[in-house]
Image 1: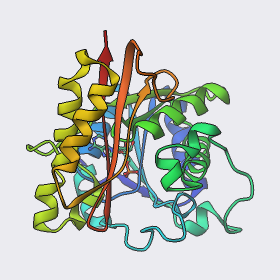
Image 2: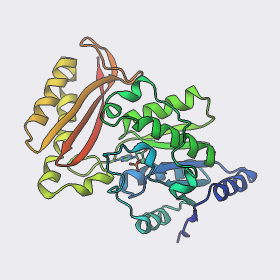
Image 3: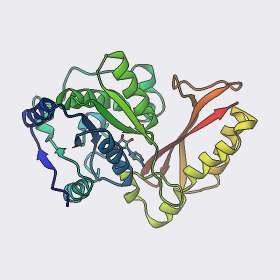
Image 4: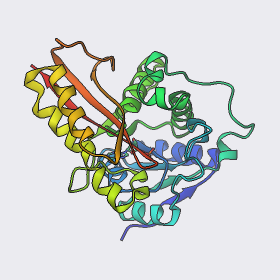
Length: 285
Ligand code: AMP
C-alpha cells in the first residue's frame, strides 16, 4: 500500500522538503503538470519514479500562459482524483500552490522569453504562451531544484523550448522526454479531450491518422508528406486545421523541400471549440 503523497502548497514548505531529501543524498525528479491527470501524465510520473528517490509532481494552472480569450477558467480541475492516482504511483510530494503563492504581486514583470521560435506554431496561435510557460517552468525549477525534470513529447514545441532554456541559462537539470500516450484509436491523450462531443471525439482521430499518412509518405519527400497529411485532415468536416508543419528536430525551423534527416510533423486543429495538437517524428533519408 502506498501512502498518500505529502501535499505542499507553499514555496517555503517545498524548499524545506527537498532540502531534507538532499541531506540524505536522495535524487529528486520533478514532473510539472496543470492537473486533470491522465495516462499521459502518469507515463511521465512512472519514468520519474524509476530515476529518483523523491518524486515531486506539481499541479498548477499557470495564468501567465493563457491568453485573455483562452480557456483558463474552463481548464479542467480534478484535485481529489489527481492525488488518488499519484498515491497509487508512489509519489512522495504533490506541490499545488495557489496563484497568489506563485505570483504574490500579480503577473511578474520579469519574464523568460522564448525568442523567435516562441512566436511560431503554438506561439502564433497563442501570443505570449511560451514566455508564460518558460517563466513558470523557471520558477518551478528554482523552487523544486530537481536533478531531473520530465516533460512529454506531446507538447513538442514546449519540450524544445524547455531544453533550450536549460541549455541557454545553464540550469543544472537533466530533461527527460517521454513519448506520447494515445487512446486505442490513436488520439493523443489530453486534458482537453473531455470537451469533445461524441461526434467530435470520433473526428478528432484524424489528427493521428494524418500523422500516420505523413509518415507513410516520408520516402517521397517533404512536399508529399505535407500533401498526405493535409488531405487526411480535409476529409474530416468537423476538424479545422490551424497549422501543419514539418520542422527540423534540432532547430524547430520549417524544413526545405530537399531536407534530409530527423524532423517532426506538427499538427494543430480545432474540433468544434476544442483546440488539439499532436506531432510525430519523421525521418527523410
Ligand atoms: P499539462 O498538464 O497539459 O501541462 O501537461 C503536463 C506534462 O504532461 C507536459 O510535459 C506534457 O507534454 C505531458 N503530456 C500531456 N499529454 C501527454 C500525453 N498524451 N503523453 C505524454 N505526455 C503528455
